[in-house]
Image (cartoon, rainbow over all chains, first blue to last red; front, side):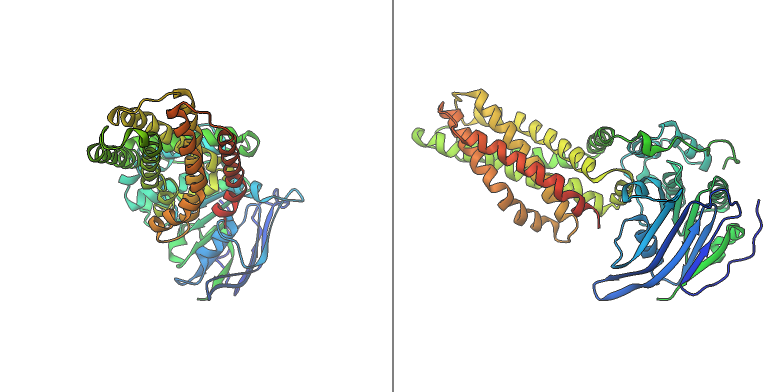
Length: 230
Length: 240
């Protein structure tokens, strides 16, 4: 397991490259992102970069724009200004390619309540062209029952299901908004393991969290951080 | 919690295996699977349609409308019942995705056009099922003979298609707004009005045994236009 210094604060810009350089041709760079909701400015020129095998941490208090930034990176929100560039092997990915290569887990993400955990993941496996048994493998890995309806999950179980959804298609980039929220100790441990495996395979991660305490188990993955002020 | 195993191995790149048809079919099946477990839209649609049908038949009955006016009035009543039944249940197809925050997972997992076509196909299957139940009941309760059942079936199929696709498009628009119930009626009526006029005209011709003239072609063109508009507009409506 790689060791690295604790996170280093760097105002509203940051960049990070993972311990492995085998995927240095892969990078996500965002520059001067601005996003407002009506007259309320939320992102005011945020820039950062993350390369293969690396993790970028975004911190800030409630309302500072962490979730908004992640949703912009995921393509769920369009920034008012600024640019996002995702380079793979020297080629910039299209919006559709980016969508297919992103794993997203966030509190705003919910699942179909009438469907079981397995049925939910089978649906998204079908949509993403992933073998259906991948969902079952992930559910067993995080310790979730296969046949429980998503509407009957506790908040911690729902968070585990979000991890499964994010990793279902073995994405290149993980966008994790408060990924350890509501997880118990075993859940945090398996989450850290899954993240480690993702990074070991050359994946990138951007993690948003209001508190560093929540990330104690994975702090060795984080080289750089962006701090957002409300 | 299980320990680390080999389950999180690299998978074949999903992008290479992706097909639009598989996404569309998955959306269609998901809609039906969720609906069959909750029965919200089906119960709403059929309850509204059957209740209205009973009220109309009790109020007017087979003798409540003069024979000379039956061909003129009854097709209008039939389409009004179908329209309002659809309006009462189908907006849920997109609104529910936004309300329950499942739209985000869908946005990340499927292409917009596959979502639109999958949901429209689901809406069409519901509308056709509704028509298959309501029309024979309406005909029987109002003792309405139909001279050309084939033409009426065509009017119902083409009209139902327009209702389903146009309704899905409007539902997608209003799902992004707040007062969804009011907005659906406000937006849907002008969009669906030409469809209703044509469907009623063809239904009248089918009941009376007359020819439908250009109305059939116009209804086909309407369906083609609303389909093209849906496919072109939906990605912009669905994505930021």
